[in-house]
Every structure is written in C-alpha cells, then in structure tokens.
Image 1: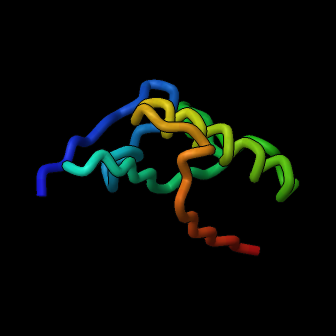
Image 2: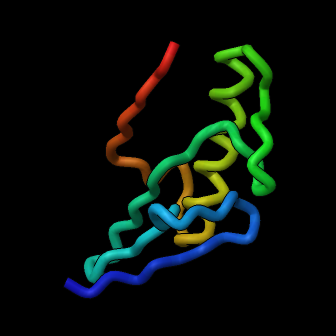
Length: 82
C-alpha cells in the first residue's frame, strides 16, 4: 500500500518515526504526540493536565498537516507514565 510521510516544522523532529502518514485510502495516521515543543522542551511542567493540553495542541498541528481535524478522529491510544 502506498503511503505518504509528512513532516511538520511545528513539531519536534525525530529519527525514530514520522509524526504524520497518509495511506492510499486517505486515512491520516498520527504518532507520538507528547508535550514537547519543536525544540524538544517539555511543556506543562509536572502538571498532567497542562502536558495533556500541549500534547493535544501537537495532535491538532499534526492532523492539520495531514488535512484533518480533531473532528475526524476515529481512534486514539494513550500511554500515561507516572
């Protein structure tokens, strides 16, 4: 299956995965959205609520780069480390 990988200058870059990919059927997949800014600074301090807000802002940025919005979400998986 053909897949387009997208990078966003607004998100931190990583060598391990792409934040956004679009499959042949136009499904947008977003990976690894956390509370880091593009310069790898942790945002939100020790507050789970603040970090979650920043992670969702990054999710919105990634979705927009793929031509989607939060309203287009079908499934989400969360990993919370305490």
